Image 1 (cartoon, one colour):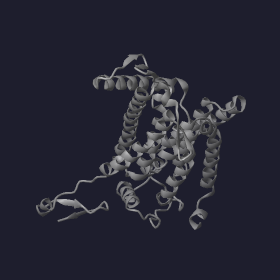
Image 2 (cartoon, one colour):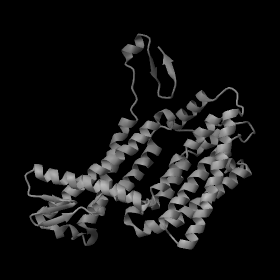
Image 3 (cartoon, helix red, strand yellow):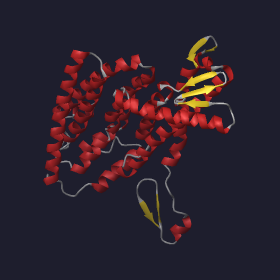
Image 4 (tube, helix red, strand yellow):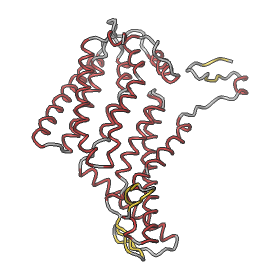
Amino acid sequence: MSSLRKIPLPHCFLAGFILLIVGALILDQKHWWDLRDDYLFGYLVPLFIGWIVYERWGLIRYIFTRSADSVSTPEAKQWVSWIEETRPETVKQGFWEKWFDGGAMFVAFFGFVWILFAALYRAMEGPNLVTSQLLVMGYTAMLFSGVYVFSDRRFDGERIACSERLKLVSLFVFPALIWFLSAPMFNFIEKSISTFLLNKVAFSVFHVFDFLGLAIVQEGNVLILPNGSVGVEDACSGIRSLMACLFAGSFLAAVCLPLEWKDAWKKVLMVMVSMVLAFVMNIGRSLFLTTWAYNYGSDAIGDDVVIWGIDLGTVHDLTGFAVIAPVVIGLLLLLPVFTFKWEIPMGDLESGGTRSNGEGERNDS
């Protein structure tokens, strides 16, 4: 609490305003979380954002105080070392810094107007996709630009370098962009992605059955079986599970992977891997449902699944939710690959090489 009392009043106003916008986002997107089961993960978004900010609070505090007392984890210490190594000897507001400051203020004003317009539109039309996406855009613009503008000086009045301010902004990438996943996309975008995935799913299932020598005929997105037909509809495209898996991949990338910019490709790669795993698992789900319909009839995929007297929903819906768990497990199993670091053999060290000691330093042999 003592560190909170040292925060200047303008920074407190910014934090309060950002929290107010977050409250508006929760109230707005709650409509979609209640309306659509595939967006139930949205209830986790505020909790995960709070956890991220809590975990990075020591790093945020370090930027403004240069006190590393609250930095305890090896990953955080490595980030602080990165800041120290790249900090310029003298900090002055040059030409590019002035352009960055002016651009950030313009973005902040743009975000504020965007939020006001979204609030007015929602008041007139009620909950709608346009308002949800506009609120997220305005919030993202306000958060990034606000953090940059209000991080120009430390609490003792010393100017902060532009590079440090940008690194501070990078700590808020997950809290800013994750809201785009927790609200439905615009209909034309979702329809385009869904149509693409539908074609790929139907194509894959047909060719697997055909390769196995099973009787199947494809007519568009309809698979005709001996016991009926199965329509690969929008719910089977995998776009619903795709959003949840993207959320899981984004969170794991933000929490488990290094914060340095040179490792940003790992975060992007993990998000892309989550997309690929979601697509592959959805094909597996479609193969299972088609096999189920092949053996028990096309109506069987709509039967309720009851275990120990508990109705878990239909076979179709239950398998849709079951796709997410293997994706998360697969990402967790891949984490050691993403965090792997090469070690120089001891023989090379004896010949004059160097080896990382795990704390960002290098020891000469």
